[in-house]
Amino acid sequence: MYNRAPMKSFRILYLIFFLSGATGLVYEVIWVRLTGLVFGNTSHAISVVLGAFMAGLALGSWWLGRKADHVENPLKFYGVLEIGIGISAALVPFAFRSLESVYWALAPSLDNIPAGNGLLRFLTSFAILIVPTFLMGGTLPVLARFFTAAVQEVQRKVGVLYALNTFGAACGTLAAALYFVPYLGNTRSTLLIAVVNILIGVSAILMSRRAALSGSTEAPVAVFTESRGSATTDKLVLVSLAMSGFVSMVYEVAWSRALTAMIGSSTYAFSIMLVTFLVGIALGSSIAVKWRSAGLRLLGMTQLGIAAGAVVFLVGYLIAPYILLGLLKALSYTFPAVMTSQFLLCASLMIFPTVCMGAALPVASQIYSNKLKVLGRSVGNIYSVNTLGAIAGSLAAGFVLVPLLGTERTILAGLFVNSAVAALILSAPGAERRPNLAKWVALGLLVVATLS
Image (cartoon, rainbow, N blue to C red; front, side, top):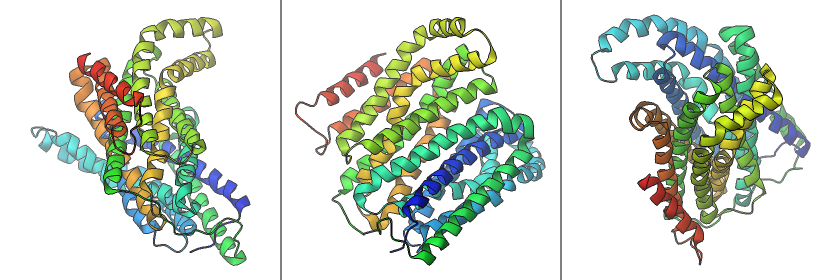
């Protein structure tokens, strides 16, 4: 057991985790630009770099989540992770410069090997990014372990943390696109954000020491309780989270390509699409906090909601150009009006499915985390599986689905997967209800996706 920070300190910790999410996305934007200077700004190069970024997150959440269950002071451990992120991230621009010559020396010899250049890009990026991304991946399970006092709180606590971190990520994306990269450049922006991470870490460590010295118990002390769970349910949850991560990235890639035709391919346009996606996920996680304790049926409904949202996007996409034109006429053609119109258009098409995506992770965490003493491991498993699915979805969409099927059929492929997962979950013994209308809706969408 461990004493926790006073309740009034929780607000500071929530702010800290919000800032942590913001720094992570600023880094991601900068690192994509840095790798573009080395590998070229092709969509394949960007997909490979993002895959390396997310691979580090998955490894970190899996391994550090297990570590969190055995540390005496999770808040201090979180502070150490943030300091490590800041130090290792500050070295990334210099590491890219030093490995650039290595990459270009090896690249010509791999031209005749299928996917050889892509593999070299991945390994180079992974080697540079593994330390900061590995540490980033551990922050959610570690803080979830610190904040959660009972199994019944998992959905609420994970939902709050995930929402704050994702809202921070949305703000970080905008800050990177509108200020840091244009005005400070890659290296100076990285060093500034690294200082923020170090300050976050130092603040967390000081708070943990203050709580230990005061012996504060204003917050409830963690009690190791258990709830019923089954191996079959756990496997079903992990499969659904892997598929949800896969489909979310397939949709993000396909939706971005579809919307680019209307709102352009500038850095600002891409940032608007990404921010809209992140805000929807954060809202979904926030909404899940208010729901009662989750069950399989609720998880199945989130998957069905994502599938229904894909249908909304496909239908809305047909009339979106007329909506955009009307907004521009109403708001005039100034730069703020253009950005506002683009945001409103993206939000109208993506908000419903992304809200359902955001709700899925805290709901799944509540179902899967049936033992508090291994909570860090459980949340780490959920997050890492979801992230691995996202890696597969990003690579599959960028290299296989969109080139072979086109944008609209790629969305239909995502619809097929979501409908199948929703039907599978809603047919499980723990989720069935008479009459089970939701299951038949999922099967209907599955048929539509198959025949379209």
